[in-house]
View 1 (tube, rainbow, N blue to C red):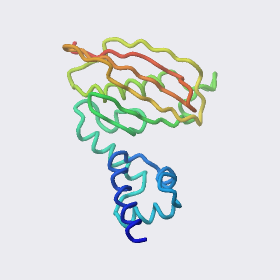
View 2: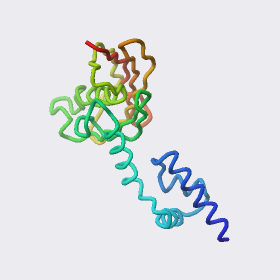
View 3: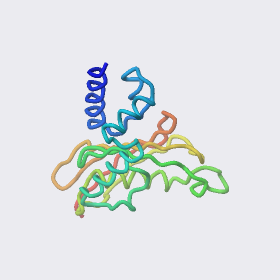
View 4: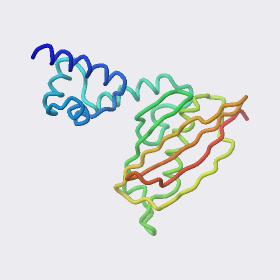
Length: 182
């Protein structure tokens, strides 16, 4: 019994090291144990809860980037590989909603995508040169926007990124953003 627990804890540590964004529920399902068992294992191993792990990853990413500081990215950073890709989450609040249309202003959606793309591009010398974007449906208060930015190519003094924002697994925004030295 003790060996099974030690094996589970060892694998748990490896999984969280690989992906610190795994929830206790996902881990419990993987190991076919209760959430409480996972919490106890995490406590014994000194692994913080998900919220704290997300903060640690974000702080580490902010410390490594050359372009934007913590207060400059729109949304909460969830994943980050400099020069490769990133993911941010933005919970839509009432102050982002237009009184007239009751929908979120496009500027909030674009700001999330643009700031994440700039963060991923990770060069203080790059400035946005072009952006080709499409909004596919309105967004309302209470929705959670998950934005992904990925580098698709980098040639010379330019870097091309694709950005996609989803809500409830439906694409609500997509675009291509080009950064370069001006």
